[in-house]
Image (cartoon, rainbow, N blue to C red):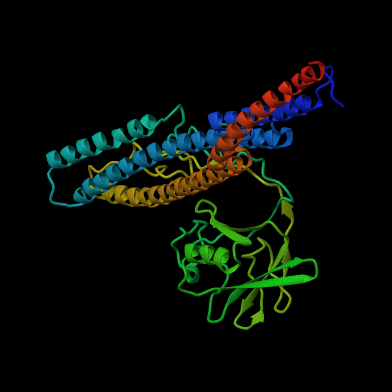
Length: 419
């Protein structure tokens, strides 16, 4: 039916042209922004996910900034500790020289003056080692104190199912002094290490129990052993050694049991694994309790000032040290040797903490990159594909306009009926 009131063909052509124009507008917006989801109206669910992940990237960036500040604080402390170590070496040199019995009174006085001048620099260095208001070497951030130094290492709060940990008794020299991580296991108190000794960690998941065997050699350093725990268990159990307490802590995300094998049979662990009395040969297995997750690291603070508190590195180096006599010089050498040993132990701990923060920062950098890549997968437009669509839609728009023009001219045929 021919009608001048209703032109159905023009209506259809107009709808098609409008749809093409709408699609063309979307493609042009994607080309302009580089995003296929630029706002919530493009895809609400994807936009919400992407915004949440963008927020996490920002949080990770803030955590990395905090790690950078903490690393700087530790680096300043290390620099101060190394400088104090150099002074202690010079003090020892003066004290050793003063042990000679052929020195005159004037010569001893000169040595004492040099000794005092060097010693007085120690506190100046320790108190000056401040970065961003934090000082790890003047006793202001002693671990366990009200102002201990904590660093965020993750944007999450840890947790999940928590962690399972097991802490053994301290490795020490018999006088309560902990070994460094470089100490060999056969020199440490606790387990008597021999041929074919091992630790066996068992993790049960449903009906499946997996056992990891960690060989223990007498020549292993504590650091070697700690590293082997993680590698031999494919990372499911990790170990960490604290130079301050001398304890090894075993951790896992799953509940585990551990057995000490002496030779070829389960044996008494001497309390080394569970910080308590060992179990008689045959059935030593310790189930551990879950702990809570953590997203922070407590950085150990020290006191490198002269005559610090008991247990601090330089508590034996006081203003009472006097090298004006051979006997006094001998006592000074002993005190300085003790201080050097303690100082080097503390510096090793600080260095390990700095390395741990570097590892965490590297991980966070990779994590941030991966999250940003994931966001890109969700919202980024494929510009090669969009450019092809843009050209296609432009041609389609021109054809639609031509079709609408033809449809609009259709009613004019009615005039021929009245000629």
